[in-house]
Image (cartoon, rainbow over all chains, first blue to last red; front, side):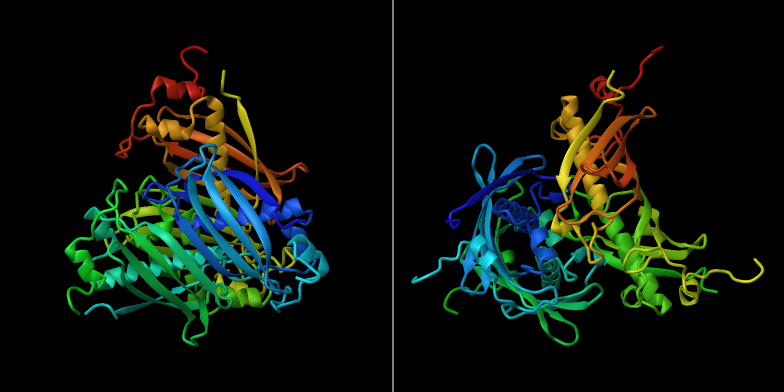
Length: 140
Length: 140
Length: 140
Length: 140
């Protein structure tokens, strides 16, 4: 089962991502969440670039972020990502960002995504997509 | 009472804010929320720049965004912002972004902010800050 | 002749545009240059959004920026933009960003753009495009 | 001698870095140049974070970018960075960004930096800084 597959990836805080408070600007968390999604999907065997090439796009419909502590320029961060279906027509990513290696949490949250065609029309998830996101099938 | 003061400000979607899906990239909503906060505070008579100069900073502790529809390069958007105290030690901004003048919603959400000193220590909101955010005092 | 048409537009420095040095991060200058181009083109009667809808795109091929002084969060800036053909197959924008109203220069520079189809193929500028960019025609 | 030390580092194009033309937005090149500078300095044994902690800042005074070809979301890029003193009071970084491993150039250019104190005052480069940037001294 893929439901419990967790991806871990690292990045360093860029100077461009800081603000005058001396920590990362708040919207960067959503950009780092994207890095987590990209690497989780790559780990599934189907990258998001491949998925879009197949005509399946996952635009955000909702996002939630909690900010736990500061992260400064050049700090090494670890992004821990987990994903699953959310109902029958959406996918959901849950993400935690930590200082590496100390483990102090920096930001956490989730994003929920529609499954749409390149024209923006909601589409039913194909079997391969449900497989990736670990949909439980059968009697439950 | 200032509790129900709403600020409206406009901006145009920049090309730099779009992504390859042809709409604004998701993290831009948090950057536009900041524009809403900046103008709401200016409307209070105390800009955020003045507030920081007084030693009061409002870092985000939590953010929530819902994405309602696409907004394309050069679209004119209207940001509607409302703010209030959230408990005794936080402030909260609620924000809606619309297409202008049609009124179709683009994104909405809220941000919640700690009240801290330049050193990052949580501080009790001064009377002037409670005044701005419309804290109800006493029996009302 | 349109060659000497100059557009002036204003913007405020966003918190998201600052970095830990307390001034705007260097790449923001290129994003502000885009704001100048957008407003110069709107002033020509043909917005860049309209131009792209007509199948003409102006990707950057070269950019140059000089940084003159700091600009802080919430500072009001004025962008002064001028454009012209550069040879027969490119357009060039020259841009100055000032503090408003004091006039102290913040950044200046230029961007040079190819004229391409949506598929990215270089195309000869149509007459309407040469008109906008003030190509001198005839004996000179 | 360190004059010819070249650093190579890799990054993947983020979705947040694309624009509606389907390639990276032009200002991202300056952000990637920063990644090149950061890694070149780390390779010198003195990271830029350490350098700022020592009270030496390197704000941009001038930047130049040439755009050579498209780079799309999730493309793997290689950044090649070289640095040296520029006159007695400035440092200069020269940067090339390639597709990896194919080697097709994406963007190239340079940035020139003042050497300033945290208060923004131009300072003479210390011996350790000249050492890093490979200043030739005396008759060699």
